[in-house]
Image (cartoon, rainbow, N blue to C red):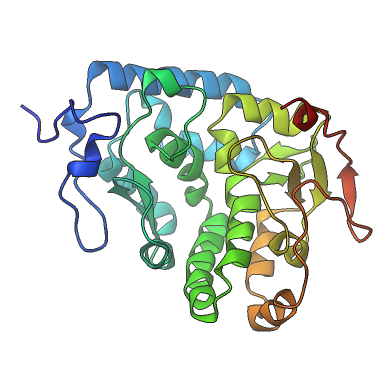
Length: 289
């Protein structure tokens, strides 16, 4: 007999008891054989698609964390493998948590991961983050020391942004890097953003479709840029390395926020004269939808 009732809809964790920091018990034994099989099929498909598309750091971390051992990961066991590498742990939550809670977790090297897995009917697209998006997409790179430092810095930066009323700008940095970032490599552009890594279709689109813009990362430019949440991205920003991304996160954001408060927002599909354009998109896909 399991603690969580399988009959409460696609996210049974919504009714599970939660702590003050919004974490809860994963109750790993409550996952059904069908749910474990769903994870395995999502994982196998992603591994096939990401070969030659994901950044080396991500693929290496998959092996370090033993995510290929089969079935939905037990977050406690996953944390036990992750913590000796970078001091991070994975904590289960039911759904998106409030901003102040999210930033506190990141600032203290805890990644809140949704505990439910998407239903069969939403295998290809799910609006809310599930355990596959969070654990497969986000967690592996937390085994990389430089990226792990960046995520902690982002959490601390989020606490400051909330106090200054600049959360909108900082959220764009998260969106265009942590969720939908690309990076340069000796073999061409590669994926590191979790939103792309956990989507088989966007993994191909982000690198190979002629529609989106691909623009070199510039912190201020990114923090001025709108984004869309219900489709592929119209623009992808490309970082040089995790080291340069971390270095940018240590800048004085106070002066940056002062400039952003006076600057106009930039449309998600726009290319501006100051951009270092790696590839200008045709936007053809977006005209069809």
